[in-house]
Image (tube, rainbow, N blue to C red; front, side, top):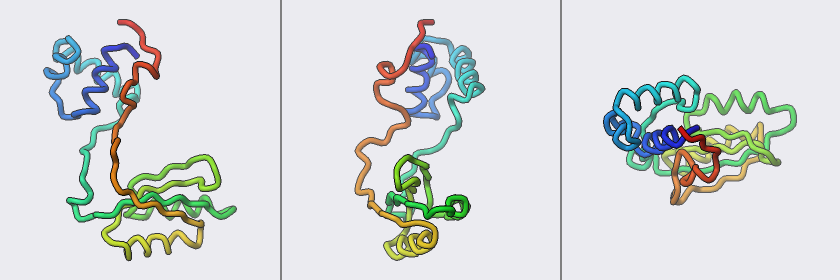
Length: 153
């Protein structure tokens, strides 16, 4: 990963709709050169997609929560299958520790959250934490240069 690619990724993480011309200006390349680098990053699997950043509350989904799930022994496959079908699940993390799964969920009401938890009860013990706010919501660490080995180009 060289500094130019890293700066392209930073710019795209701020605004994925930025034009190749603007991206090129940011990293001192022509628009076609920036486009070529981005295509290579996509082909290498570094860039896996582009998506909008959504405000769930303004979409009518005012409640987001993290649900830690301690899945019962031998129920993991069934749990994963169920979670994949739940419309309320925004993200699912398989993590270390007793609560091997953490779900980020969005619901329209507390009663909807209660119904969701009831669906999980046969397969896991749950511990729910309401998300009050997200002071940091980034796609990549702020000072990635310190964290990664950068090659000079």
